[in-house]
Image 1: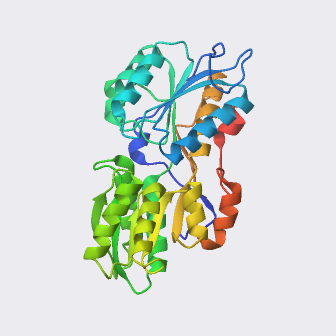
Image 2: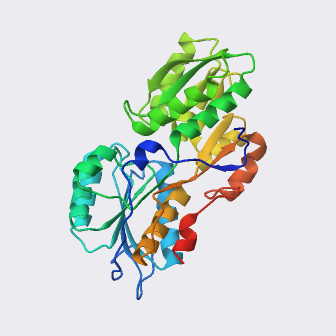
Image 3: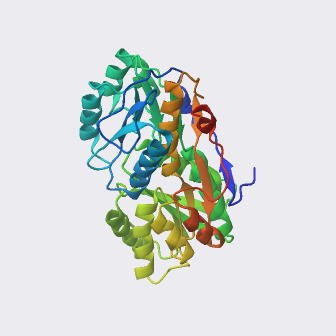
Length: 348
């Protein structure tokens, strides 16, 4: 299927779907912190997300808090100290699990690091909404946990969209190096797998090495410098997130190869959209953490009202190239195109 830079709704990964089923959330009194309103029948929601050292999760937090404010939901947001702080994030969920929240939104750093807390919630029959990064299906089953819904990006499809664009950018072929996150990370791996699928039809384009840069901009810059020195005819980079891509773009600029070595990444943070507009990045597959966070709150509100939640919901994804960059920047942190939100109607 041909995908343009308009908004397309993508199917959620099958691996996440296996873990998910339906449940409902009981009503609760208002919470002690957060930006949501309180009142009769309002949900009391606890949210645990990844580290706010990354702009992606800052945007997610904004979506959570702003939606809570407009939806009359009391929300407490806890975040890991960094996007690699698996133990600290687990401790935060375990502490919240002992409090009287009616619904929990979880954005795990890994597929299993929040399982202990999720098991506590399952034993108390609390509603659990999984956003962005899926909880491991087997681990959830072992914890006797049934997740109410999963809301997130199909990362394989996002990577495939990037691969299709790279084919257009390199009509004469070439070698592309992938810069991934932490070794073994599910999200990074899915995006790179999708990218491989996207370039599969172009025999003249080859994916060379894959380098882990631990989601860090400076480390990505250093890795890209090394790659550029050893591959003087490199065609491009596929980068698993925008923050690392900005480091890669700086390495390319230092080598005097801006525009010659193509760069495509996944996320859609404001700095990356600006870099696309300025020609420093060639394209971004934008996902919308603001919308993912907001949908998580809507899901809790709907469950609190006794509504049946869809098992899986695909978050919107848009391909942003230079002609669309100004439009995307004006709309951020929301999509510039239309998208489906099944929770909006349910949470009314």
